[in-house]
Length: 68
Image 1 (cartoon, rainbow, N blue to C red):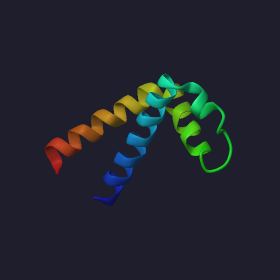
Image 2 (cartoon, rainbow, N blue to C red):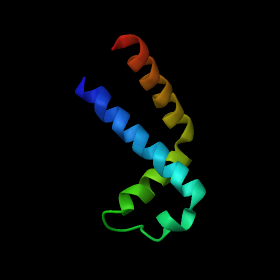
Image 3 (spheres, one colour):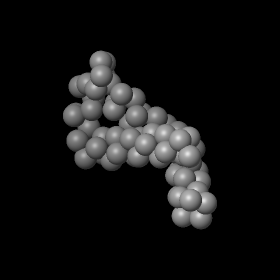
Image 4 (cartoon, rainbow, N blue to C red):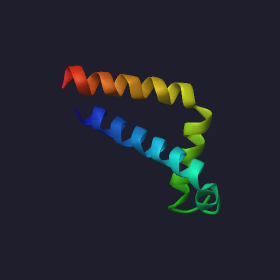
């Protein structure tokens, strides 16, 4: 169960970062280094690996709805 929870948190972080990037790109672009750089990297991961993130989200939703 711990692995599914970690996957959920990571996917939600990536999706939130991409959403914030679409609304206010300057907010994440100025914080590319340091602790806040995690959010910039999450947005880049979501943009570049979009099909893989989408498949992981579908798998996560399936596991939450039908397995748990």
